[in-house]
Image (cartoon, rainbow, N blue to C red; front, side):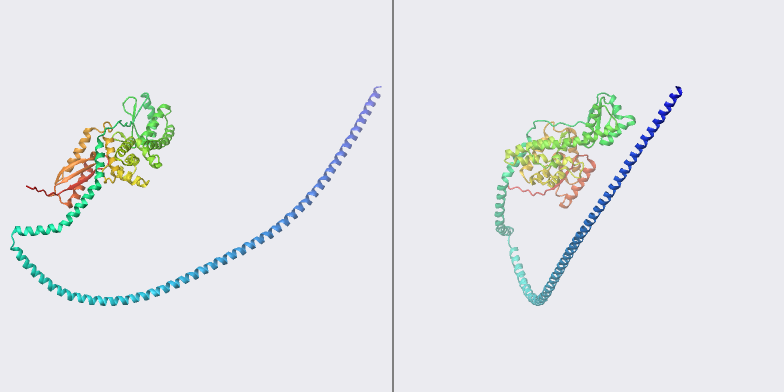
Length: 537
């Protein structure tokens, strides 16, 4: 039984192997057929693609041939067109050259005719010279005759003098006076008429000048503020942080702002010292921001300085625009507005110059209205009178000269230009408005509290100025005017001649420059006057 079972198992195994072999063979045959079918399909597809590619290549070749033909045609047409243009240009050049040749021929013809005319003129001049020679010879003969006549007249004059010599002094005086009176009657009458006409023309202007000068005694309504160069600290420990390690913070601050930082024993105060008020303001804003922020290091200082520089530039423009609108000049040039805004950070003897300019503009407008002048133009002139102070530290010259050039550059009204030039007496005022602005300027500066200069130093400067002028030989009197901006010197006409007046003014100017410290410019005027006085009894 066991053997039977083994045989069955072996038989079953053999049958299974046969069946597996048969199934594997069938699968391999089917896979081979599928592969052959795929190969045939691929070859067919490749044949189709090759045929399509050949057809497309033929199409592209045909298109390229047609396109090359069209390009050849276009190139040929362009060449023909260029040839045509070149022929036209050559023809035009030939025409212009022929025209030039014609012009040259005409000029040569004209020159030839001109030479002929000159030849004729020379011939005529020769004839004229011959005539003049004849005339000169005739004149010489006439001169001989005149000399004989003059000798006869001299003899008659000598006889007349001999006759007059026999007259008394009173008789001769009466004769001379009668002749002089007769000769001067017409001249005296004409001069009287001219004087009357000048008086009529100047009477109205003179009255307005007197009124404007009288208004200088009016008192101001408010006091201008003064600037401050100190920054308050929350505590003294901040001084060490401002200085920084090995002084890096303070060195960075001073190099970026251009302002000296003074840290002394004064409690809770840091002083900022600088010549430029705008730099000083940037430094003050930066220092206050650093103190509030608490982050004090070189990178932060550089960042804040640049930020505040841009901010102050915007503020300057805003200050100028606000001031221009306040005085009624909104059409002022934007550059002039920005320049005027810089005056917010400029002081003169402690007086804010922008506030001073606004005040002068308002006073000038009021006075112009009272006198029947153009109030708008007067306010504009008063507002711009000190504009030169905004850039006088950057440009050579006095603020009057700088302001005058700025007004001319931006095509301001001639009255405004003359007002700026004459408000310190450097030139003569040409309008009533110029006189009004000068009066308003003096009023704004002279009112109580406007300026911080001590009276003692002011009086001493004027005294020293007059003392220098009086130290020169031949000087009778000297007067310091215009708050020390001018010195007028009266000289003895017997000691100082006209040609020495200029030399004296030059010497006084040199001595003032070497011995005195003063703001701005000082005008030196030397006056020589010779008077003849007599009394009728």
